[in-house]
Length: 318
Image 1 (cartoon, rainbow, N blue to C red):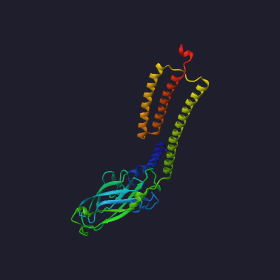
Image 2: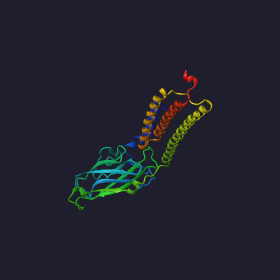
Image 3: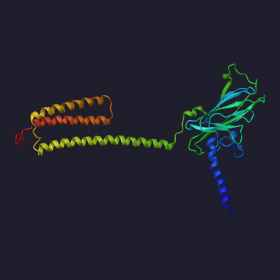
Image 4: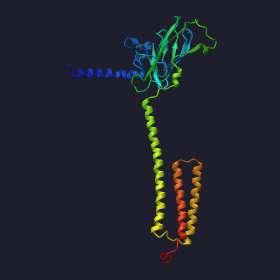
């Protein structure tokens, strides 16, 4: 039987083992994959376990030949058509000295190598040449573009590039120091402009467009139908009033004239507003509302006229 303290220690060790990968990966890749160095074989747990030309990994500011003890700023860049961010690892086999910059760090298992400390797609690091002529300096650079789901799978993609810097006085450099520097890259730049669409995202977008179309057209049909029903109800009311109700009620001209002028002015104003809405290409909602208001104004003027012309009844003379 394990003692209580022993059980706590065992559980604590298991927890550390479980969370170690989760804590390590966001701050940079592991140094090894089995017996192989990640910087030499790549991120085999991502993508299809093979380098992909869809990822353009580049490093700029690299001299053709180094000057003893001189420092150079390298810019490591990562590009992919759909995966915007990722990580990298760079190593010179400890011949020179690599110094991390912002969002990069030295690798714990191999302090001579550096990797990202935060995901991104652009890092600036410093390389200091050796203090003597040691011949050619080889480099290994691997870059991994991830899709951001936090899972190492086939949706990620990586690429790897090997390059070297010649020893002093072994390469012909231009007088302009900037022209003596170069950019080394690997990958297919054309692939950056052809993003692979996620079928689920495409279907979700299509469904959203359909829902939006049904909503808009459904509103159009509903309100136009409602408007037709309202107009038909008014016409039917007029018909039943004339056939069964004895016609419209009489309105004395002393009341009909000011009422007609007032309703006529309102209708004219509504007509002007409706004409502006048509000319200004307003939405169908505005046009339908203004059109119904114009019809309401015209009907009001019509009612005033027919009531003024209606014969006075006995009750109207009292």
